[in-house]
Amino acid sequence: MLKILGRKTSSNVQKVLWLCSEMNLAYEREDIGGPFGRNRDPAYLALNPNGLVPTIDDDGFVLWESHAIMRYLAAKHGAEALWPANLQERAAIDRWLDWGATVIGPAITPMFLQIIRTPKPDQDPKAIEASRQRTADALGILERQLSGRPYVAGDRFTLADIPSAIQTFRWFQFPVERPDLPNVKAWYERLGERAGYREHVMNPLV
Ligand SMILES: N[C@@H](CCC(=O)N[C@@H](CS)C(=O)NCC(=O)O)C(=O)O
Image (cartoon, protein in one colour):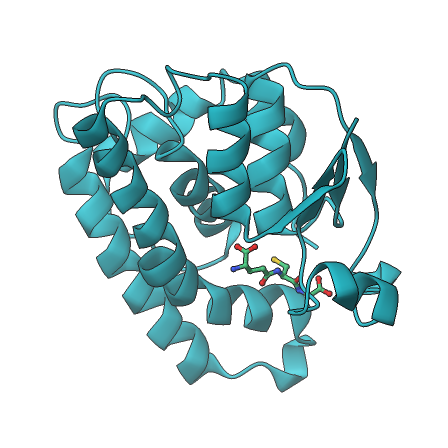
């Protein structure tokens, strides 16, 4: 059976859990990382030399990097609607996975670490503001993409929605000023209809 190694509070683990829910895929999960530790143990480093979560073990096939895992699982289980075989449709989705890892993720992470992981007296307001601004700019790009489209890659929910949606959920939890982004807000509310999103993403940030 598919085994997912990683704590469920990690945004990168949540991507994989949400996808499994979309595909009705059975799995076992083991808490690794954060307060559970063990991610620097030699046994874990032998599976994932980065010492980060998630890692999967699919009947002996070990894989890390959340977006690679998502693509692997979607392809293995023929989830054509989520990650189509058509080269151009697929590339248009892959672009948003890369954007999640290189633009919105790095924009919002400093704010998350400051607001959620740093005791209030030690927080750096300048770092929070810089991250807030960078995230608002990134979400401005998403706002334009979602103009006239219900989902990031078009008419239906695909892998392209997952990374950005998880960061957008975080964005709406932070006590910061947010520009008015009606398309992002409508999309975010639309995603609330999805069981996997409700179960794995819509949880208190820790
Ligand atoms: N690019 C990697 C990033 C993985 C990553 O940064 N994971 C974080 C959690 S979101 C982690 O393992 N942090 C250490 C920990 O949880 O102890 C991926 O997408 O899988």
